[in-house]
Amino acid sequence: MRAIDVSPYRSGDREQIRRLCCDVAYAGQPLERWIDLDRELFADLFTRYYTDFEPSSVFVARDKDEVLGYVFACLNTARYRRVWRRHVVLPALGGIVTGRYALPWKGLPRLMNLGISYVRSGCLKVPWRRYPGHVHINTAPACRGRTTLSRALMHRAFDHFASHGVFRIHGVVMTSRARMLEKYERLGFKVDSSHGAARPDPKRNQAFWLVLTMDLAKGSLRPMESVHMRRRGTLRRKEPTISCSLPPSEA
Image 1 (cartoon, rainbow, N blue to C red):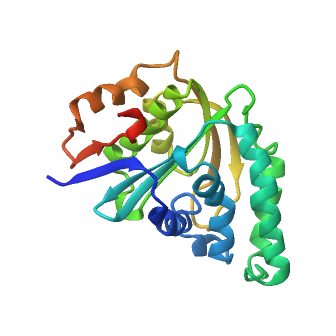
Image 2: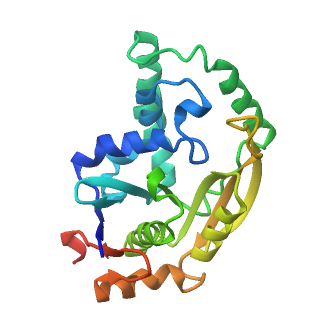
C-alpha cells in the first residue's frame, strides 16, 4: 500500500503547483481547452500570492517528489486582496505591456464571454468579511475523484485554520457536476450562493460558480476528524494510506 505524504509547501513544489493549476484550470479541464492564454500569466494570477507571500498556508500531497495535489488555506482574505492587487495583478499588467507574457488575442472572445457571465452572475458576492479565511484545492487529473486524497488535503487545511484561530472560512468552486457539491457538503461546507459561468466548451454541461462557507467551530465534526487521524499517524481507507505530516512548529 503506497503512502502519500501531505505536508507543508517546499520551494521546490512551486513549478509543479503552477503547472497543475493550469492543467485543471476550468472545471478540471486544461487551460488550453478553455482559452488561449499564457500559462505563466495564469499561474501568476492564481498561485503566486500563496507560494510567494503566504507559503506557510500551502500544503501539498506528494508521492515521493511528484505533486499530486495542493491546498491553499489563506488565513486573511482582506490581506490577500491587498497584496494580490499590488504585488500580483500590477506586475502581471506590466508583464503584458513589456511582452513578458504572450498577448491573449485569440482568447479575447472567451475572456469577454467569461466577463459577461461574471457580471450577469452578480460578480460573485463572496462573504469574505464574515468568512475571512479562504481555501482552494486542486488535484492532478490522474487523481480526480480520489476522495481520500482531497479529504486529507482539506483536513490539513482545517487544522491550519483552527491552529490560528480562524474558524469561519469560504471557498469558490467551479463545477458542472452535482457530485462535486455533494463532496463539499460531506466535508461540512454550505452553499452560500450559486452563479452561472461561461462554458469552456459548448458541448459541455452548464458550469456554475459555487460560493461555499463553513464555520469550523459550529459545523459537523468532520473537519475535526483530521486531528484524530494525526494522532494515529495515518488515514486508512480502501485507497492508499495518506500520511499527514506536521511542520516542526506544530509537532
